[in-house]
Image (cartoon, rainbow, N blue to C red; front, side, top):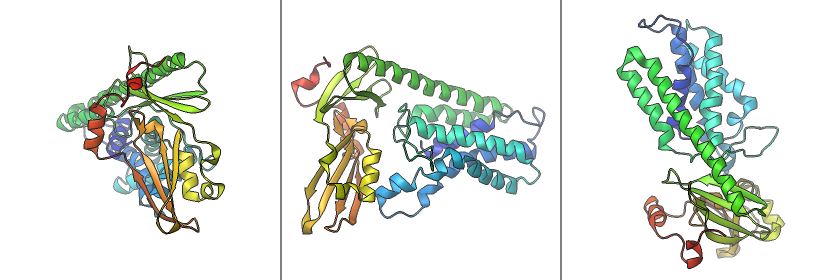
Length: 341
């Protein structure tokens, strides 16, 4: 999730604890430290974006959402947030600040990263698997706006600050819960359409509240499309499933390539010869498709000795180009206009 949402959510969670001071009185040091610690705990994990990495792909896939986003490391991050808050408010009590920081870390950072589609490695160092619920995009204004409105209300109406933050929290939580229910409902609908599919996954889509993307895994191909409440799933494109040998074993063993392959749940893979004997590997993922075309692709250039000479993330065009494709006709052939069988 974006950092603004993390911080606002942390602040609202800090308001869950009833203040020690009577209503209308200035907040006690512990009350202030609880709010500050909750915000810090919600933001600290993303300091891993400052860690060095060999290239931008390694940075996106290994440096970010690493140990600082793991459940096993959560007590340490919460302790750091608590320590910083107590440096500011020295008369605050440790335990309330620490418990609030731990809650904010889990619910304002780890959980939002889990409900987005990118995936987060919560089980490090015991498992490198990326977990995700696929409820929202990484940036979703309808998650953020209630929290922001509650914060502005709390700032302007100081006597109602706690109620304002909690109302914003409740509205945001209700929206996320609705997204989870909607995703489960649409997943069941796609499964009914493809009863023999090996796997079905439904993902949120950019620019839309009700339209979701789906990928169905058949024995030899992927079926990518869109689905909305009240409508049958719409098939938009079919692509062949890559075989294990889509890339040579020596290329798959390159750490950056290995990470990109592990990240891609529905990979679209290609390789081509480049200049000076280089190999250009492209690894996309259909969970980020638009009209059945991947919009996020890792492009890796390998030297003859298999060292990585360039690594980048292509996003399928500019924001304007993606918007035009989203607004355009569904697919480029008559097959894409028909609902799925």
